[in-house]
View 1 (cartoon, rainbow, N blue to C red):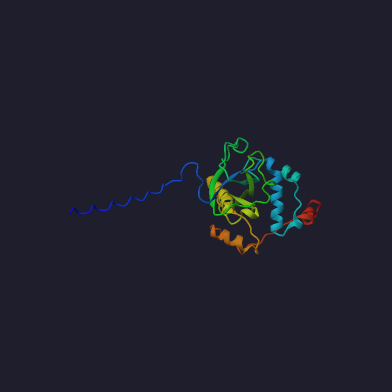
View 2: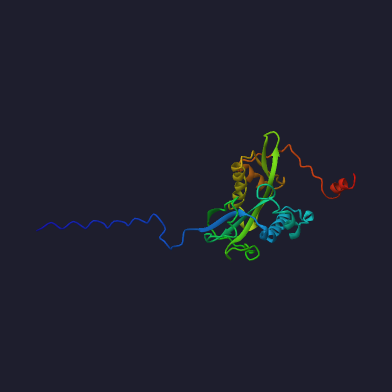
Length: 237
């Protein structure tokens, strides 16, 4: 009697593809974040962002800026020589050629893809739709900065006046992107430092800045002349 034939070898387990097939949906929810220079058409959005920041900082009683006052004082000098604003935009789709926002030779917009576990629910998506861009591009935050000077270093630097990310986009790395963009610009221009202030009750922001490598200078206090105290000097005080 002939010996029984050996069982056939097991079929090889197919190797999963190393890349996502073209046209399929990637894992997670990718967000395309872009940092670009602000321009005059952004003023209405900038004004809304500043008001939201005043609400967050509990300082609405000090808020008196208008779109007209912003328009008349911003964008009066070339970027980085005076008041400069980086706008943070987000989109669920890659950015296409954007002549309106890519036409400044002093700064090429920077795009970073952030892969999130959950989609972002933005209740103000329509309000903050970016002017001149596709309907999917939304303004999520901004940073305003300008040059200052360190006599100890003998070098100019940047002072960050405002850094703000809208609530639904916080804790996702976008604030770090904005501040990093300012720091990178300072390095590229050979500047010596970037500095800013933070409210003492904002412990989350303080921790965030320390994690980025910033030193919190506890011994310094802000001195400010404004309002009637400032105007008195124009009246021969």
